Image (cartoon, rainbow over all chains, first blue to last red; front, top):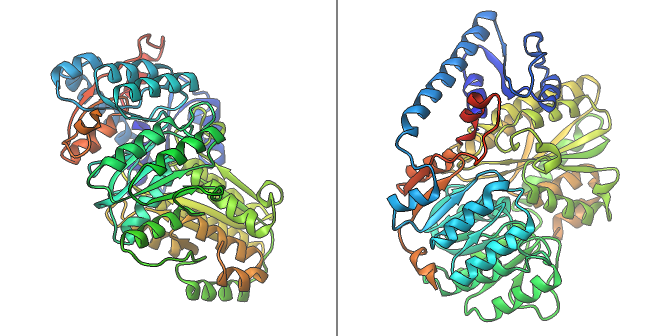
Length: 494
Length: 56
């Protein structure tokens, strides 16, 4: 986090084209090469070394940036030494100093997470557990202890939550309102909360449960408890459940929990349709979840739509078709795992079963295989930006599908470097006589620190077709690949 | 159900790990106490630099 902030501040300096601050691991050396930032002075850096690389418009600008980076590190060291004397060193001592604490937010490395979370639960604190790489056996034990004590254990691997209008983890700035969420997906909750905000609704509480809660092993224990909790909460009028398809045992628990709640429940289990006789209103996509919930609390009818603005889509398509030679396959480069999953479902539905497992590819760059030794791409865009540039040089890629996730805790200006990478990729493709169509969904709100409208404008200026959700973006990508789908897709739904 | 001490009540938070989460909560006006958490067993070598990175 510190290094990403330093790199971000350097990028914002005058005369700096690109900057990286990375530990000298083998993976990071590869990253520098891919980003065109490999430089002789850091070639021999090892995992214990910090590499600062600046691509400046002049040697003076680059030198000044490196000097600024040293100053930032020195300031940080000093502040840490000063504040370190006053901070508690353990959770136990913190609770002694804050005896009425009611929540522990924990993001220590996974190997230590169980110990700290268990200590918090034993002290009667609810837990928001951001840490990943926590063994599932530990998750089962933590959630059993929590439910026995009537406490929430949000996570492990819980990216986002909202309690009493306060965002936890990576959270978009959304209004407080009457819709409660129970989510096994951080970016899924961000997408629904942001869409609700755009529709004029707010969140009462958004209880994250971690991505494995509805697995066979964990059995949906925290989802059921969160539903019971929101069912009894006076501020919550309707509940949205967000997850991947539940395992059979977890589905049974989910259905039982919904049946005893006297409030409407919208269920979005991405990739699963409503089982026969299942309670609740089942919807297919995250956008649908927000729209159905909004319609329901306003007692209005609702039918799902393929696009929020079909006329705009028609205009965009006609421009693409009038453009230069097209062709090639789709490459999806996602930072949000659930957004990638949703895009896969939509594309496979329209382009044929397993289309994204064959000719077309969708990569979740937040998955472990891409984040070993690196920060999450929601925090540090360097790796994805390099892959976008690479796609410009790859004649097999015709459509690039992207996501951008805003909110607190994430990168301060992700659109800027992404737009630059897209602009470069499209120019390289155009010089080779190819049209590279770029489609993106932007998850965020006007109140987010990055500002939704400025981020969208930056992408659109680079020629990106921007949509408010992953499903719509994926449908548009399908149309860009197969224009013959237009009559069916524009009229029907995805 | 002790969730009553959480929903509808002011959050009072103990934060372990990424310091940025404590800063975000503070910016929201939430009472938060950040723990200067360290792994039980330190990494040998390069500890000074790693310590700078571990506190967020």
